[in-house]
Length: 124
Image 1: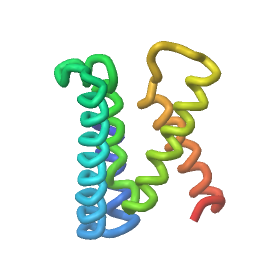
Image 2: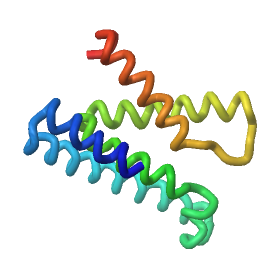
Image 3: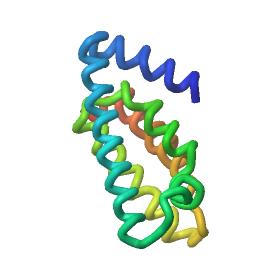
Image 4: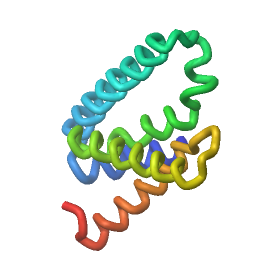
């Protein structure tokens, strides 16, 4: 994941420039904080203990993956990336019906599809 994060910074730097990449990364990190607070609030509304949030609901790999790809996207595209990843995870769960969802792996798959689409000019 450290290599992915380093590569994401390098790609973001070459694509947008250093300062815009930092600005995008900051806004995207803020979006992650808002999403995390919303998920945590949902857990509290369901009367689940806060200490089990990261043990049962959300894994460390999921968080690391979301943080690692932050420099790759402008904020609107990052929200779309997260939305498509969530929809892909939901589709995967509807087929498999397992207790847990490998969200980091699904995000990596969606990122791979995104990179292929960008490479072949299918995604602006």
